[in-house]
Length: 281
DNA sequence: ATGTCCAATTTAATTGGA
Image (cartoon, rainbow, N blue to C red; front, side):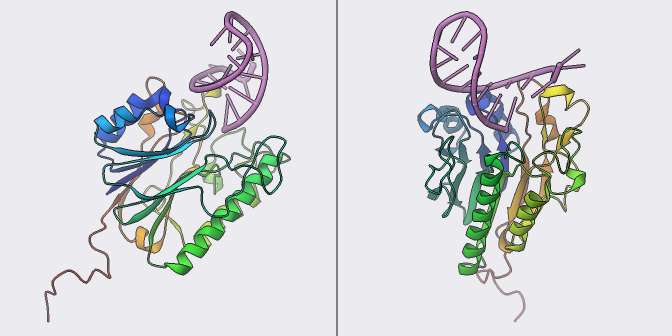
């Protein structure tokens, strides 16, 4: 299975480019973020014509997540349990949830397409929301893996965190001044790893950014951030055979400001697969 | 000049979000 995650920054503005990438790269499962449309506005036809099923979760022009898959999609979840909400002027515990998480089971893998809140500024209520959201995601992960430790679980998406200084090539993003690099955000990312997840791309692609701002010639200057990740449980990580960051997708006509991150999985050779014939004995 | 882009509304310039 080839699985990719991509913040497409409006699927309606980029559907041709997105489907062409998926087909050209033989992507089986594509987790998308920032579809920026309601479910009924999603351009399903180009995906279906290319052989993909699609599940989408979009409430308005903001945020929005989706998963396209060549294999059937089952057990769709809208939001993860405990996911906090947020709305302007409505910051209480019962604030409505945004369209930032969709999960599904595909080919035995539990895949989440996640769009972590941006945070906006260190003194903004959105930053508190971001940390709360990540904390709830960590609790969901820990609880899920406590119940089903051998589940092939993947959290994919735009985490809006540059975990290390090497992941920050943007001069305007400064520790102590802006979001994406603050110690609490980095601690929240590390907590996901402590909950039993591994960044399955970094060992295979040690360097490289996944996002470059449209402004200030960030891409030509290579002033980007590595903020898009695929985090996998041990059963998922054990199946990873390759990984790619498709930097070229930042080029050309009307690119997204993010590029796809891809992993290759071999799900047929799990160590506990006792269906295989014994060669000896 | 934030050397920009996207979507909605206030439909043609704003506004909000990133």
